[in-house]
Image (cartoon, rainbow, N blue to C red; front, side, top):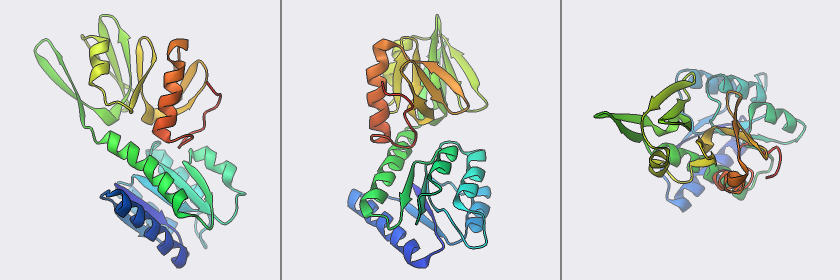
Length: 248
């Protein structure tokens, strides 16, 4: 997992790096930490393909674009990577919601706050590393990258797989229950008798609706409402990256 820290204060920058490494050492996780003192240098690296798994961004940088502006550029190409804002004031906290921030932390930041954000990011990262869903049809075998699956829908006698690549749709003749049994627990949840959704793509939940990135809406049936809420809370550790709009 690659952790990106962008902070122009050298003392606080080193403090963030130290807390991040301490968490990795205590949890026995292999991580890489990339540190920047400039938002513009960070964005240049991002545009060259920096594969970040979580960003810790200061809000205000001297004579440069602020953290909110940098996050908006990141969101143009990645709607999922967790972004944590860190600031000496909370006056920008509402703006953080416009770029779907995981957290808005106020300085000084404790080790526990940093560790909590890293746990959420690591859960997402670890889940996405389970590489493929393997399905067979008419003697052919398909390997579908798990992290690309947005949701799966039963359309008898087919199963429709919607992937996060320009809403690419794939249909395979197989049993819905068989597909459900092959998906990694904790990453996918059934929200309707005919729909399974990848929690990585969920933006918010209401009593009867899930909102996914890309303004995709999926129904939540009463039968599955409790399990959807529990899965959401477990995946995002009680109010993680997105806001639950209405309690279940």
